[in-house]
Image (cartoon, rainbow, N blue to C red; front, top):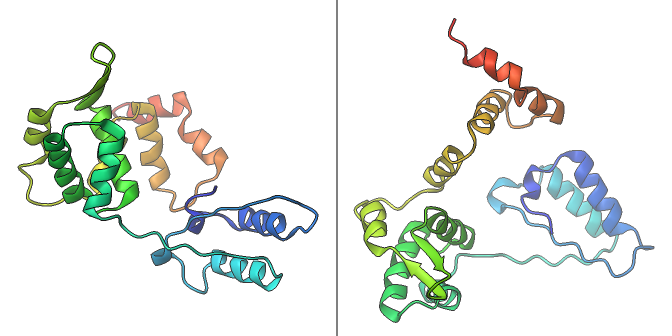
Amino acid sequence: FFDDLQWADAYSLHLIRALVTDKSIKHFLFIGCIRDDEVDITHPFATELYEIQMRSVAVTKIEVTNITKEEANALITDYFHFSKKVTSFLTDLVYQKTNGNAFCITQFLQSLCGERLIQWSSVLKCWEIDTKSIITQFVPEDVPDDSIRKLVRKILQLPSKTQHALQMMSCVGSKCSESTMLLFLDEEMIKRADKPN
């Protein structure tokens, strides 16, 4: 499974095409994921997909949409086994923050666990939820939590060296070579950058 193929470089896309069109490879299933809103007919991925289809390779497209509130509730119920009241509260919050985007639901629940607002109790052998802290932290906001704020929160949890490297790489543009990335992770370079002039 390959996610975010809309960001794949030309060499990776050529390799994928070579693998899926090679008739000598048996019992091979390739699953890829793209964001439709980032790929038009001129995009390199669309070009490679067209080439694959022209070689009589069966391609099945599955559009993944947001899940319903009931489906989100079922997911939360199945995973955490909270009481109906707690599950209802958590589902309302999760759905408000994610609008049913399955990826965002997973990320939001992981962030709640990462911040120890939901955690496994080895003593009680069940999940525990800190509803008071969740209400304090999330409910007063009138605006749904957007993906940018979630991403920023995740970045701020990274080690400072990694944060610095990300700041430097953001100046490079949308693509960064491995050698450039390693340069940004260089300890001496970070120390020089942090020194006041």
